[in-house]
Length: 175
Image 1 (spheres, rainbow, N blue to C red):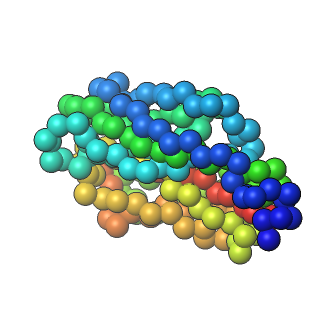
Image 2 (cartoon, helix red, strand yellow):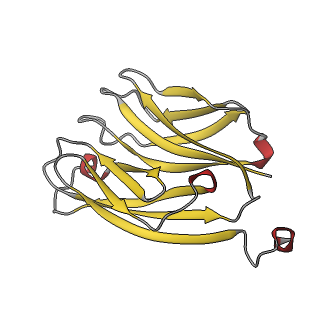
């Protein structure tokens, strides 16, 4: 099947990386240049760099900012630094029909928010979780993403939030 693309794999390259997010709440990591139209970044996790047990200090998300930069963002008022891990996956040409990055903000007293995307074929599309960061008081509230229909991605929390929480991701549609 991979022979359809004239390659040994549908993946052209994978770059793994990590970055430390300091008290400012953001940082960037330089990667080898990629074609952003056929590349995604996958959030691989985050931990805080101290013994603080509060989960708010381990929330973060990553985005592919441009062809050579991944940006990590976390709760800016944290009392310690966080380390975020990610993978940048570039597919060979002709594998991805579309790649749509998104950010969904869940406002206070809300459990679910939908974002509109350009139409995809649901049976050929995959939602990649890019991570989330939460506000103080929401540290026990994880979110999940669903491709609700061809034009909608929904972020849902298990409970209402007290501050605006942000969830990032990418919808990949394959040919």
